[in-house]
Length: 478
Image (cartoon, rainbow, N blue to C red; front, side):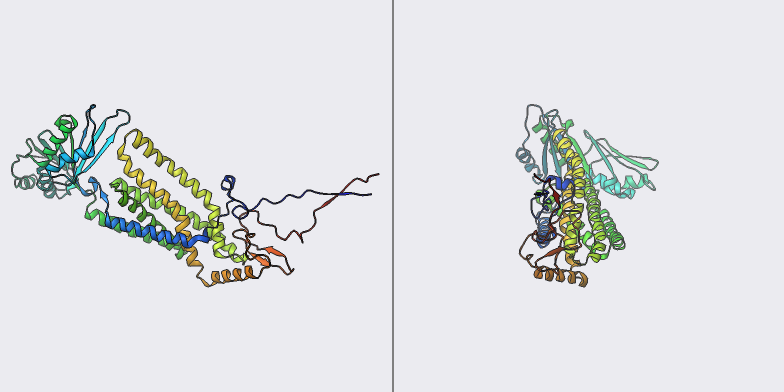
């Protein structure tokens, strides 16, 4: 008698996202199978909501422009060891002096536990320092922001460098219109300096005295900085012109490299990132400084890099879409996004680590508040840059492309095939990116030629009509 033993059969690993939940190893080995485009309308509605909320916040709250952007006067003093600083108490002292709207910030040094008060106010109209600075700038053909101001006690020193045609007589004539000063003008090459031994009293001195008394320090310990707006109307105008040229060149390059719809989707995603970041600054009142603007420009490059990586993969898979003939553009987009998902997450994580270090180590532990403005803008921009590449640019492109006749025909044909395939409608057996077509044999199904990037799919045919497993001949029993 002969007995046979069937070889054990191994079921294929279920498809992640279809038959089981994703595992961490799926991300590591790039075997994810998320259906991004199933919820693309939700992503686009979220995109529109974020833009509208950010614009509304910008209109209602406006940006908290720092002193380096709009100009003004800054006082800074360190508190005595036995005193604690409170914003409300500082404002109570500034209110009678006419500086109730001044910006008050208190920082603490983690190493010395010393608190520092910083007060920022708009430029005082009748401040002698402003009058001298403006007169010197006009006489030398420079901007007020180009004038360096140094106040030591009652003495004031003003200097401007790189003057094309220094005219000492013109500077002296301009300063003669200011009452209460006895300036000494010195011209050295292209540099013009003005020294005033005794500066007239101004509201700035009253604030200095009040802060020194509150902090338990000497008047000389209060640091005063008077600056003009470094981002004036002329600079803003040129910056907008440069930004317009940048978007124009970007659209031209992406159109030549990919196509116009990809270029338009990428630019929309970049604009979304900028508006979102600006909205965050408007909602939470973070100060905007030149470092913040620099971070905004850095965000552009990172967001574009991630979007170009996604679109490059989409372009490569689009050629395979034409040969397969069964998958839709949405399914192809899902496959492309799953292929670049791990790369995008890894790039974003690596970029975010040094930014988080700037915030935690530099600002919180070491007290380097100068890095805060730059790091905050980068943190928001890097996060939203990755998000917009996957959930703004890609869904927008997919929506536009599926309106084209050839891709709309693929979508309609796929829908008809799914509806006519026996045993397929209403089941979740087909993996994302796999279209199941009817087979000539009744009751059987065959997967399409579209491959889901190496992800093992469901069984090609039902178990009832599958070929029998290979049998092994057993030993004859006596």
